[in-house]
Length: 265
Image 1 (cartoon, rainbow, N blue to C red):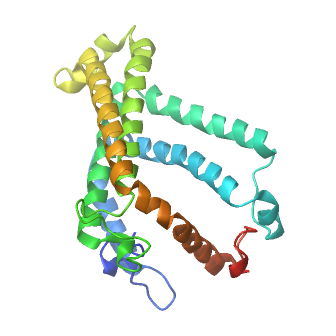
Image 2 (cartoon, rainbow, N blue to C red; image 1 turned 180 degrees about the horizontal axis):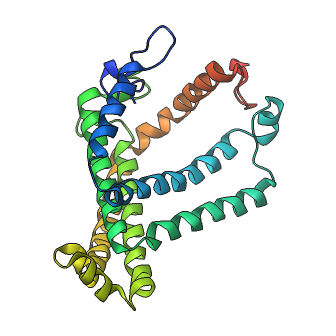
């Protein structure tokens, strides 16, 4: 994140062996602090984030497949998912259904806790972008800031998609958890927590349902506004951003697995 100008510069400081000492020390301090919390609470807060990350990786794999042909990646000795399109579909579906089931199967209390952490992450992203400016610092022409939102060009659409998908997951969760825990949910949560939000099973389901519907609506509005105000500019920058990505891959592998990227080969 510090390399992309989304965190303090000191976080990317390394010693003579290339080890990010400051980051490791701060991570150790954070770990010591979080160890003071109940283990179940930590699992409730962190596990959903990892599962959502795996879900997003499916989309990343699909995008990489489209942009960088398999044949070109094989020539470079890069790992290729076996099975072609069918393999991609089967393996992607397996990851999707396993992650979705795991998100909901831990129960309504785990789901709502992880759901809350997702929004903390979104707020943190927006604040970091406002404070540190992101990649606009290194290349303001390709990654310009929107003067009205102070976010990167395209961030508004991405945030809208993020909110929409979060709402959809919450809405589906209210339905799934109703059937999954409906036979014992009321008694279990009342005995487990006695008071508070987590003690009210149907209260949690209603929060998931109405928040899900609200977030879906808000997400659609933000996506529409983003495309209306930033769509044309993003289309103009698409080729330049793709070339920038090719340059990064060139730095890492010494070649670009793409026939269209001849100027880098």
